[in-house]
Length: 142
Length: 471
Image (cartoon, rainbow over all chains, first blue to last red; front, top):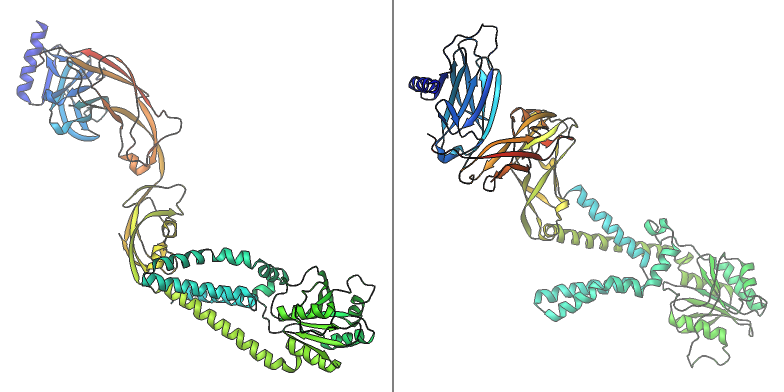
């Protein structure tokens, strides 16, 4: 039942943005505002199924067509935004703004892969004010 | 013509002139002239296409230096030993030391009056080294008493000849070659035959004092003549030694001779210089690496627009062909360089060339040098994966040890570098979890791994099976 709810919310989020997806794990209110926004999990993967990251890895074939950056926040004290900054060889390629809703929130962004994208990548997950939360490093290969 | 060329010609002309002064009158100079002619004929035969002739002459001239040293070792040694450095470098044989003619004449007739035999040798221009043997080095100043004592009967060297050079008795007891002539008077003894023998073979003048007849005779060339009195002997000696009455004529002749030699030396070296520097004009292009100097110790060269410049040089074919790589240098003075971009014009001042070679063009004429102060920066390392993972396997994670390494490089340069990537690592062979070691790639090459930081990265791989049907 729980997974069904997450799946539904992903569909709604996809309708709002083609590149941004957000998924509240629960609609319960955050427990107080004194708690800090915390990134509980972040990883790269091949896809999302039923709200969960599939085939987490650090090397992806370009033939997959896309690669996912998944991030889970717990807690989320208040509605806020985070950024997924995609860098190809230290050059900013894409910057995705993602909304987070209390009390917990899973969200992801992805890029479409082309032949020219082969090489080392990294995604920097930052808060709205630029605080670096996590760096995920991966490669796009043959 | 540059001032350096003038000095060049003058120095070499003087060396040639000194060579003439030192070896004049010896066979060395004649042989050198002969070798010069051989070289000339070799050039002619080469231009005419006479293969064997030119090859043979070339072989002879190639060994000429060796031949000169071996054959004329005595002449060379006598020149170098007999003269001090000042005489070798500077002295001119115009003011030769005059022999004390009157003392010698008096001594000869005193010896004759006392029926004491004597043999006095006055060398001419030729070297007597090959003819005179067993002489004892004396080197004493000529005096009547000394000459009398040398030929005193009880003196062990009284039978030999005394050789007089200038105002000194250089050798005593010298053995002279005997003449084999049949037309000499029968009463001539060994002393007269020795005097005749040396006079025949060389240009020396020999005074012989007869012990038996108490007379004085002179041997010069083929003739032996009895001298009647001291005045006649003095005149003969002065003629032979070229002094007193003929002093002015001698000086004029000597100055003319030396002046001619100096002029010929100058003309010869000038001709050689022109043949070297004014031959067929030849152009050549050389790529010369740029050298930097006077760099501030706190600054480093981060980048340059070029590493080498192309120089178009011209000069005579001989000079151009003889250019060695280390003779051409391009140097940039970084004494005034600052952090950032510095542009330098490459001019004649930056380029050193061999003498006689001219600079036609520099390509490129300008050079940009980027300078920076070296700093340390700790940077994360990322593996540069390539290739394709085997089917149904996923590279889930890679833990790096160390995760970050310290880099040293220019501050401006390091500002833009945020990740150090490893060498390319193929996924083809990654089939299971394990460890591999990889090297970081430092790009640009001017950055370095700091001392104490690891130069190799250990990567611990985590490999899992792929979950199929992902959408």
